[in-house]
Length: 232
Length: 232
DNA sequence: CAGTATCCATTTCGATACTG
DNA sequence: CAGTATCGAAATGGATACTG
Image (tube, rainbow over all chains, first blue to last red; front, top):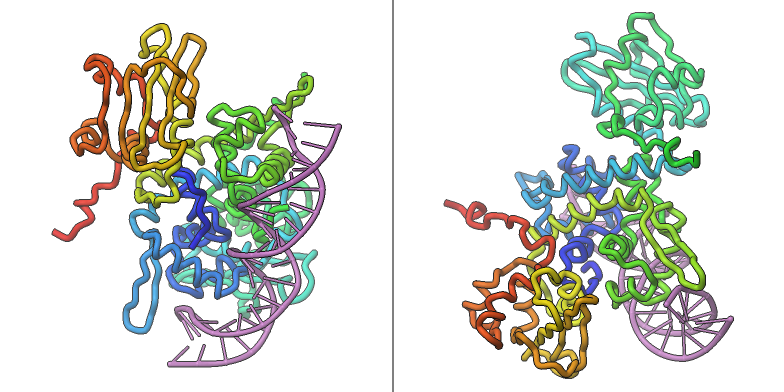
């Protein structure tokens, strides 16, 4: 049981549930459409399965999440109460992107980044057939250096192994740069101009890429005007 | 330092700060106008001074709160970043009052309740001069049973000792009932009708009381329609 | 696939007392 | 008024291994 504030204030009562570590991130994943335990895990990879399990149970008991068993498959989904958390998650996200713009090295995660990018591919904009987009992080060592996103009529997949087909476009960028691009901290033009992001492939495909890859839903959030905060 | 999620997601970055226990309640108090350490403590009485101090320092480092020293008096106020937390606190409050309506006995606190009520007295509506409103909780033992709110031209005070003057109105109600009235879980008519809330005093003053005491800002939040959730 | 179980290091926090 | 100091109990949660 989450610890109690001993206050009748609705903010306190809500936070008794919502301020438990990881809770709102699990809710975020459910909002983004994850339904199964291991799908949820992909969105919160640093969370141990035991803890995810515990949080899900707490959310079910609180009436925010519904656990559904059909056959031998278990799925979780938000209840009406859970869906009404959306304005909170959005407000937190908007505030976070405005006021906590700095990312530490520990915040960067290629797997998570590709996972996010892949679920925002605009399949309408990508040419029919099979399209492979490769990503190379020159500053990342080991197996997390190269990634592939494969778009077909059936959907979008991420791979950490070469799918074989030659990529239509290869994106070469520092992990931090691509992360900042995804978040909207920098735009395509700025990333290309800085030289830290380089595209390889046919000119037409390179020009089309920004339409294939939609950025984070929060990327368009207006940022605080730093100049206004400076003394005259 | 608050623990890290290891995610670049703005929700995660924001929650690294905001999901620390007590943090949002301290922000709430600052939004309600508390400026000094001991004033803040009154709004979060179950928080130890050491912990309040720690949270304030964390909020200052995060740029959400500004610590201001003038003379030998210290005051805290929200920065622009902190003021932009208001939509979050409001959204959390609205969600909480809609979806966590049940209060445990541990959530009831006469001191906190009178403190809240006193800062929402509509001084415009109260007659000029000196007006005393007494509160009696028959179900509370000891010194927390009787309270007085004193309204003068200078402001509004709460007392836990008889201020002397005869009260214009005496409110006699169970602690839970007055709390639920304050939150808007029940209205004046309903509380009076149930018989658990009784007013003493001249009829004119008794009728005027609901205009003197404004309820929580969240009291008017529409509640989920429970009937709609039932099977047909 | 969908979790449990166990263990222990670490963190957190409440209580209380004390200070300039 | 505005905190700090200290201490021990309790909770938290990360790592790892295991199960139907």
